[in-house]
Each structure stands twice: as structure tokens, then as C-alpha cells.
Image (cartoon, rainbow, N blue to C red; front, side, top):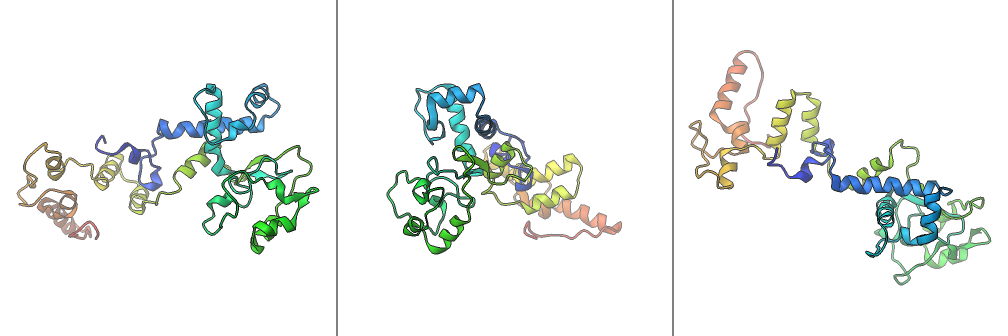
Length: 277
């Protein structure tokens, strides 16, 4: 197992990993849970003290090295929390129109088809609200017709004291760390071969062998020669060819001999000539 990259080991099982939790990726998820608790428990002593001392600085992307450990943990938690939360609008004073998520599930800065018409700076949602309702004229100065129609459907919560954060997928049943891990793995592709091997419900040792085989983590002669542990990469079973992964799976004379014996007993195993087959 020590031949495999640790990042591959920590990938979820459906993406070809072993589902091990890395401390490096687990810490931000736990910090996000603390930040979410901080948002929800506005009447707690901790919230009152931190809010009075730091205010909106807690939600900024970067912090300097002079702040307390509690501040740094919450700040990192908010940075991890942002992809899975959006703003409920009350007056728009706390929500950046382009950098924060308040329309659908992405900030406007991350929309590939949107051209930002203002300089890089704070442009708050309150500029589009007049007397507790959306100001259509101001919206049309910045957004197109389709986007204005979407914004007009967003509810303004007049009964709330201020803008508030809510989960984008509130009814999914997932925990905050679960949401964060899902975001962290969003760029990975499902490993269909490994999913098929898992569904086969093989013996754990056999399953582990196939996983290592797929990850090229078997100490074959080619593997050992590549790392200069030995000088000859030929198969030790007299095949007169390099013992690499493809040779182990379908090229070795011994594996072909075993398959032929099994087929004589009534099994219908095919003889393959490459890994792709």
C-alpha cells in the first residue's frame, strides 16, 4: 500500500480511492462546522464577543498573522463554508452583488457567461433595493432581461433583522463536513472499473490486490527495475518479456495456463491480450 500516493488513498471509494480521511482535508470541514454554528447561535456569548471584536472581518477571505487562534479557525471555516451557503436578503447591506452567492448556487463572478460592468470592489445588493422591494430600473442598468426576471423572484425577508446565511441544499440531509467533502471532490471523475470491482463483493484480500493492480502498486519486475531495485525486468516464469501490469493480467504464460485449466472444468473465462479488453 505504501507504493500508492496518499492523495489517491484519501479519495472517496466511488472515485477510485480507499475512503481514508486526511487530516489536511478534514480540518477545513470541521472548521466550517464551527463557523456554521457561530452563524446559527447569534445569542451565544462566543458569538457576541467575536462579533464585537472582529465584526465582518471574520468573513473576509484573508487574515493577517496578528489575530487570535479563534479568529483564524472561524475565518478558515467561513472560507470553506462559502461554496455551500447563500444569502437570504433583508436589506442587502452585507451581500456583495458579484462576489457572494445570492442568486441560484453561484456567485456572479463565477458565472462563465457574465461580464462584470464595474471595477473590482464592493458593490452591495442594497443598491438594487428600494423601500423593501427590488428596484427594477437599477437592476436593468447592470443585468440582462433574463437575470432581472430571476432576481425579481428572489424573496426579500422584511421580517428579518439583517441578511443571513442559509445552506444552498437545506433538505439534503447531509452534514456540514459532508457538504464540504462533496465540494472538495466535485472535480473528480467516477472510477467505473473500481465501482464494478466493489459491486463484485470479492474477498477483501482479492479486492485489495485488484485495487493495487489498477494503481500500478504491485512490485512487478518492471516496477522494481524502474526504481533501480533490480536490473532485469523480465518475467521470472520464463516468458521472455517484461513483467509489467499488462503482462501480469493477461500476458503471462502461467495465467494463460490457469485459465485454460479452468475452462476445461466448465468455467467460461476469456483470454485477453491487453488491459483495454
